[in-house]
Length: 138
Image (cartoon, rainbow, N blue to C red; front, side, top):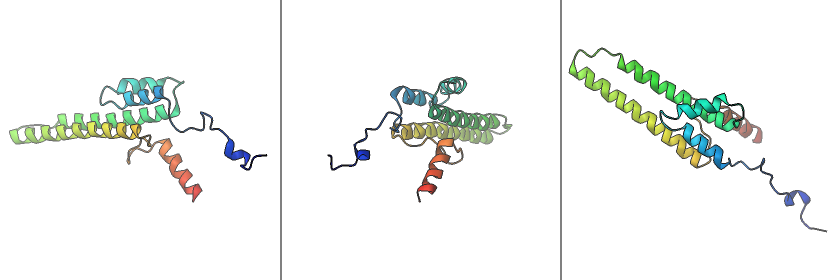
């Protein structure tokens, strides 16, 4: 007779492990690529066989890119009569694009660290369920 309870000797099954498979992580990295990640993100959302985490990352990547594209396009329509207005507009566009690129890199870093992929202004289902679980634990 063992002195350890039976529940302590249970082996974790793959469903209980929180880590994603390598294929899914690579797919999520491709979805988070700036600008070019639109294609893998759209494919992941259209396919029914993809994992829920991959679809959540795809939604975040597409939302981030759409926000960037709308803001960038809105600045392109600014009338530039003077040279100082044109320089200011181009500086704002460059800052916006750099911010979009940095946000994508930040999300890739979070994916590398196995953290939730979410931005403060874009709430994903994973972030909501994590908050709900924390409330139930306390």
